[in-house]
Length: 247
Image 1 (tube, helix red, strand yellow):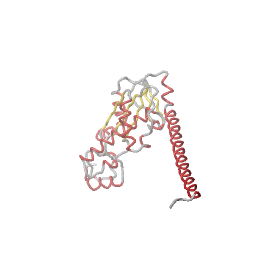
Image 2: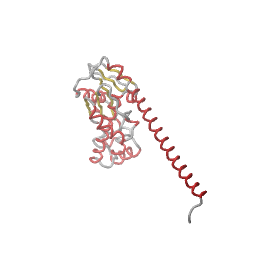
Image 3: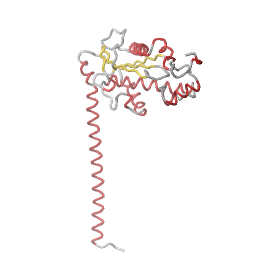
Image 4: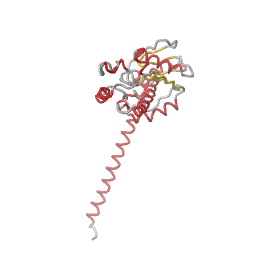
């Protein structure tokens, strides 16, 4: 049955209204996208504050960070990263603020774009020998020693590394304030997480792929049930296991 003129007009107006709402929705979506891009650009510029401060006097600026100081098992891993002058990689941030998926996406991009990357790894056994702080310094020195070109200055996450003759700038919470340190934090974190996933296959029953060696309730229960494995830091688990395990 044919529509009346009034019905046709109503249909036309309804169609126009739907089109207008779609356009408004797309406009708002685009505005949000542009605002997100603007905020990310501002954040990245802020994260290059320390790099800009030293770019006039230093050709090669190195960011250093570690992953794995707190876990009950596994190595401590340090990374040292030299980026090209002026480079800001979108979405780079303190690795702890990023999802695992984002870290895995950024890892190859950092490796590709960096001028140099060094990774130092110190085992659980060595941590027990010299303590976690000294083991962290050892991993950091190893990471720096792998770099070519040699850095002119080191931007460190909070610490001053003994035994290096390169000028150092300790930055509290540097992994959230410096592009170079944030890149190092991602490299260290992804490297260590991948190692713990592999160790999970070598030492099943502890859940290393999930908790990455940190002291979760499930991990502590697994240690009590199974005893420690070679990855466990004996100095970290003395209050968890009894003397029957020789700790």
